Length: 293
Figure (tube, rainbow, N blue to C red):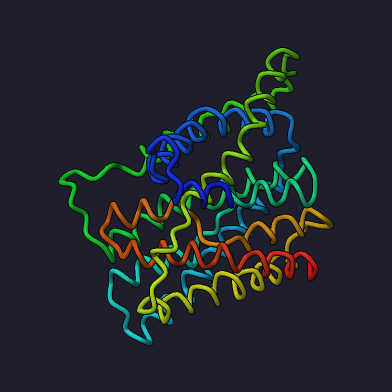
């Protein structure tokens, strides 16, 4: 992450941080992440607990949406800011930061928790409820908006569908294919962290945005993980799986939300500041929640 942040200032080869991040995230999204999804879900223990992860993730995200909506309604925030704040408070960085943190903290088995939390909870809500929120509070300048189905027509989803089908039918991965998938998967974590560092922009941190970022920090970094801890108590998720799932929901703001802010003309600078500030604060809050869990 520090290397990515340093790239923004050094610009090696004349490449800006935004240009570099776009290329790297495209490679990860279309090649490396699908390979990891296929490798992990092909051999993962998929069953009722997958539905439980989805319920935990969706319940926590909806809770954060309602919390920020109530705060925004009380203080009558401007629509552009309101939309950006809801997206920032509700959707955690479950994959780009959650994957390396959980894998390093709990072990390689935690990758399955992250991928299921992402594909079965965070991403479906993002491309349905998240899009509705962005459209409602922003502006849709495209004459014919893309259907929601096109958002799901993405490589990680198809990789998940194929992996689940192979898993359920008891197909065994060939050794050579498993080796290829493992080599591609190994590049996901360092590139995700480097890309996250590229996305951090200190220019977006402004005094005028502080009053709007504070509610996001409180909800995202404190109330949402606390609610997840309460909710998971009603689900039969036990042991380290419970700790990993809740810790994944305690991650800072999702980087992808900046795309929605740009697309629907929400307050992009406010969202970028929320990403930067919550990511830095997470260096303190994540160890705290880990010790509590």
